[in-house]
Length: 499
Image 1 (cartoon, rainbow, N blue to C red):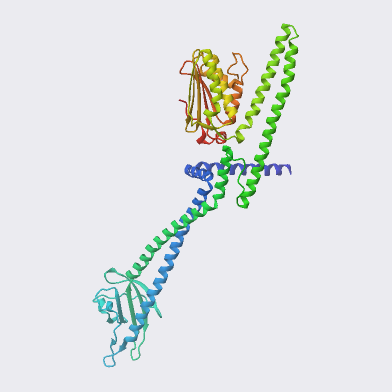
Image 2: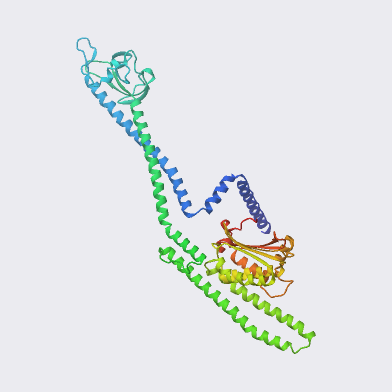
């Protein structure tokens, strides 16, 4: 039993390997353009997917309908043509009689159609007695209609007539009183008229189906646009919530989407409450720790100098950590519901205060701020970011600091340069990688690179440290127009190339 089970498992494993190898071969031999188009269609918008599906249906179904209609019309036109031939044949049969004197066949009436009298007109008749020709229409002149194999009753043939014309011939055998031989009576008409009528119908059918297809696609496009309008309105609401223009989604939607909008509004409200609670808790914790830290600082003054210095160092670390995490908590809630703000208006107090500081230190401070530059960021966050970087530049500058705010196609760029010692590109990358403070070698307790990096991560921006044109350090900050799009990898919200 064990041997049988092991054999069964081996066979299953071999079959699965065979299937995997077949699947890999199919994938390897599948044309690349099929994979590319399949991927594009899979990621295409709903309207485009529906329109492509409708287009494929129109391309497949309308030609099939055209072929069916053309075949039906040809059959109907051919049946009508045969009916005309049969009517003329009956008139011809009614006019045939036997001459009682010479026992010869003769036609005692005209068919009433001038085409039988015009030579090679395409319309002919002939009456034959076996192999002997008895009567013909004038239009045949010296030509003869071919007589196929005899068939009883009425028969219809496709034959070739004079001058290689395609003819449709109807033929019937007849026995007349007083005449012992079987008479073969044939009447033929050119199919040119029939073919011309069918071709005209097919041209009209092609134009009609093409027009119908275009109108059908236009109608489907309008239908899809109208049907997907609630989704577009919901998408616009989401974008407005993302930009901070509104706080909730509009629920005036069809039933299927209304429930989704209500659920998303519930999620937004819950997130808002959690963020507010977290910020309040962080603030309460920071304020609660300030008093004990101040008391400990006061008590440390009673210790000798050798013991007091390490205590003050640790207390300073606690104070910096409290401020650090308080600032992180304050920044964490800004992006979710903040609207678009003017960068110049938001940082105006910081720039004015630092400009006065630079003047007291004898440092030239150049500020070039685009008044139309705007970004979706909390005013406190942009003030914290700008103040931290400008303070660092003023701390290390020898005589000049340059600050500029400009609009770029994907957002806003802030650039701060100084003429201090600066750092190399490798040192800047190392500083960013370690998350150290920009002012680690100087005095003060600013938020440092940790908070700047947190803000950049929160808003989907970037921070680059490089050699400035003034000779010192250049801090280049890019803020996207849409932080959410930048965080989810939208190619339209990526930072522009460095200058």
